Image (tube, rainbow, N blue to C red; front, side, top):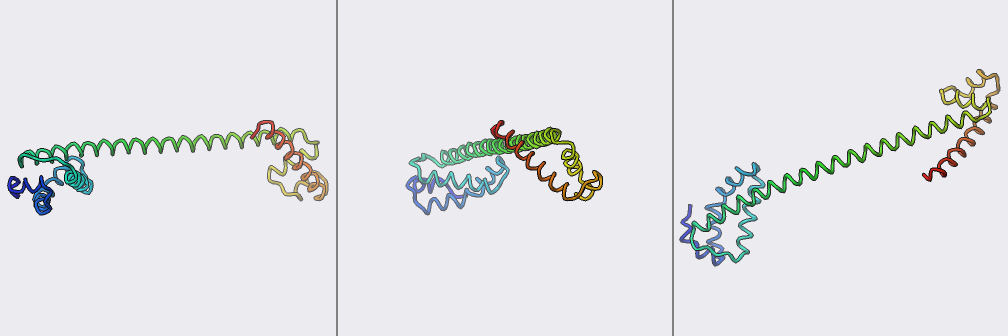
Length: 185
């Protein structure tokens, strides 16, 4: 390790050669010290470099090598704690954002499910208001029967099934549009 007293006046005067000597002799030890606090070598290097750059740009002068080293290590300690605090804050904020997003997704899904259930309820309600044959055609159609199967089951032509089904769909669509306007959706 270099004798800090011999380069102290150069450090105070911002002499690059003296700063290089300080950097060469102290950088690794300062990184290890910070790493023991923050548990991340890359962040440790950043914290040490930030301190040295800020010190270079400041007007702080030191009366002794001991004062300089005390300042460096106290600043590194404080900056390390600040890094940890900010990291925890960031993690808490990200957790909160994730939680809010999950709640928002749940709310959207719940709302969508509720709207779909209401539409199905309204469809069944309005199907109940259809004339008997149309009501039977729609119930069988919803149950998955084909036009031919419905015609055979009800003893009517396939064409009648198509025509009555289309009329029913138009009626139901109009009813749902009317309900939508009433609900202002």
